Length: 391
Image (tube, rainbow, N blue to C red):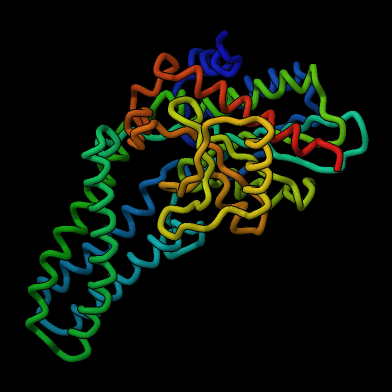
């Protein structure tokens, strides 16, 4: 039998389609989901307005572009002052890249466009006085489709490019700074390879900004579909003492702005010991839970979150492994604020994420795997049952 989540995914894709961050399509998707949640008995269903960032590649374009300009000035300049400017601009690139990956403000943050958009928040009350709370979360928005997500080889090459660019900016900061201080004119030759790497990385960001958005069946209508399936089960099998919150966010793809907005404005409505379960890309591959999350720095998952995941797997045995995340998910802002957050995903057996249509135009419902969705539904329901089990 087809999992209910797949029915919801097909409806979302056929009704809304691609959902660029901060776009009317995200609001349309949120309203569609709100209608389904209310039909299942959700209370206090509402849209949370916030100002999000519509593009994920812009801050990195600013970082790489600033560094490339600094390296170019050091290459062409006729005095040590140009080395100093080059070192400063490379340092600004390092700052922006590190801060952006940790959701912290930096010098380029005011330069990023902001637009009004929404999260969807809903709640399912238990039959009795609540003893625990859980937040089921998935993101509404979809990603652009740059060429470096098209194949495994491209993805590895792009990862090497980004790593190399970061190292070049760090090297440029130190080497050009020393050259400016010591007057080492011979260091000018180093600026050429720095400029070539940094300008190429910036060019890749420009390319990415010109690509269309994926339909996003796996990333992340799959997480939404599983949550809507849980809502239907809660309508027929309400929990006894566990309050279930539903949070569907925008701007996850551009820096988890939706989750950050929710935590800043509504987290106090939720039990501080609530378990946040983030369902992200659960439609293809084998079930996984993340032990660490983050783009550059890998932050450990809260031990309490892993405890509940392991309890659920003992109660409902499924093929599931614990892995370190490749990038970030909506769990990371919650983890950084000391919340108990768990990311649930699915990874193809080969470990090759491109075969799961990650950030590709081929990320359509027909490419999803019913078994992966069924396992995600079973696991999520097992977590809810464990949370609701009498102590």
